[in-house]
Length: 106
Image 1: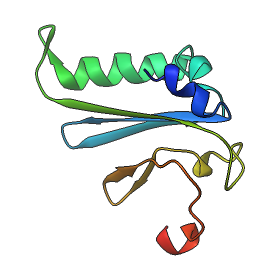
Image 2 (image 1 turned 90 degrees about the vertical axis):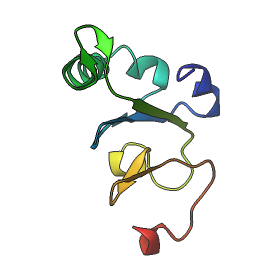
Image 3 (image 1 turned 60 degrees about the vertical axis):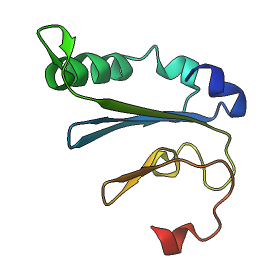
Image 4 (image 1 turned 60 degrees about the horizontal axis):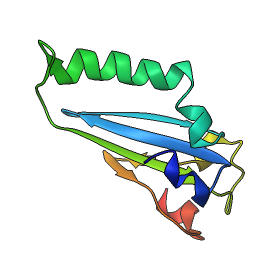
């Protein structure tokens, strides 16, 4: 599904995983179809899920995976802080649109 959402934007993509009380974020200024082929993506799933979410080959805790593909609107996608998902005080967010008061929010 992550790759299919690429039609909404190819300038940047990212995902967040929540496992237990931890949030892991990977985002890059590349299309989601390229992101899923990177070693960072594979390492995120291999290291995080295998060590924290599985016990004896069985899923032992709920996990949440939230992905986003971005069309550059407000802020350059080459600056990774402009890309999504965003995390603030333990909350993970994505949006479709342009937030014009981002300086006040973050």
